[in-house]
Amino acid sequence: MPINEPSRLWGRRVLVQFDDLLFDGLRVSFEVTKTLKGEPNKATISVYGIDPETYQILQAKGRDLVVQLFAGHEIPGLIFQGNPVKNGLEYKINPPERVLTIEAKDGYKAYQRGRLKKSYTGEVTLAQVVEEAAAQLGLPVDMVEIPGDIRFTQGIHLRGPAHRVLDRLAQSVGSDWSIQNGKLQFLPKSKVRRNSGPLYSTDLNNIVEHPTRKEKGIEMVTILDPSLAPGDRFEVRDAEVPFFNGVYKASAVRHNGDTHDVAFYTEIDAAEVVDPKPVAKFQGTIFTDQYEDLVRLAKESQEYQRSQAHSILWQDPKK
Image 1 (cartoon, rainbow, N blue to C red):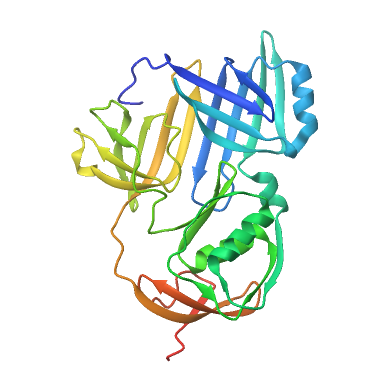
Image 2 (tube, rainbow, N blue to C red):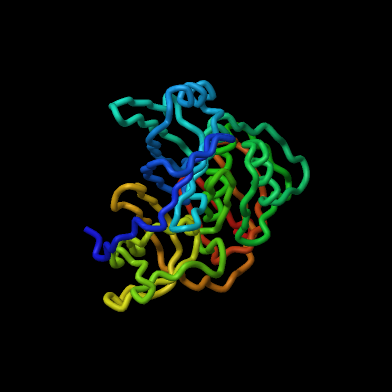
């Protein structure tokens, strides 16, 4: 059970928007899971008091329906945006309750349908390739940060599902790509989204469960924080468990809430932020077994490694 469970029902506010239909003041319960992985973030949202006519309108839109969930204390923030999965709308009437439950994934429509078929015959940067993949997915770009000046000097041929292309590109350069609230994010594993972030401390009374050790980091629970996203920097100052005080990068964020129950928390998995090593220049060759293309890579890397991931082969042209 949470160590810090005062009465926080006051000030809670949750809004659900389906395209241009906004619902405010209804009972809403939700579970949202967000990570740095390319697999879409997911949410289960239950809205009470939806009439049958509205359900029929929403059901007819299928996976074209855009679902947005806003939550917070007093001022709600966007914690999820996505599309229903196949058969993702369920409507139950159990008098006096009428409950609409939605299973949705972030950018699901784009993830399922986006494909790439493009060739670059001349030099092209990795940033340009990532932005092209985002365009084919039909997604705006939140941020694309590349670890160094990476260029395909002899061009590159891209073909297949856009999300698989992004998987390969991110894997080859030690980065993560993901869709966060309908926008594409490409972030090196050694970087954070922004240099400032929230503070969780016993003084602010926003820690619900103290940090505990997990592999390569910590896990903890705070009061619901809509501002925190995977890749964000945050700081912990826990007077009761000072051993874990420090700066971390959120790798997974899970929002759980119910406007009419106790739950209104954010669970965080995080890795400690470590200063990067000095950079060294390296020029190599990368082979991808998916596309059978040979492309040359000019890279500013943390250090030379034979391989950063299985199925990726690096070769030093000087050897």
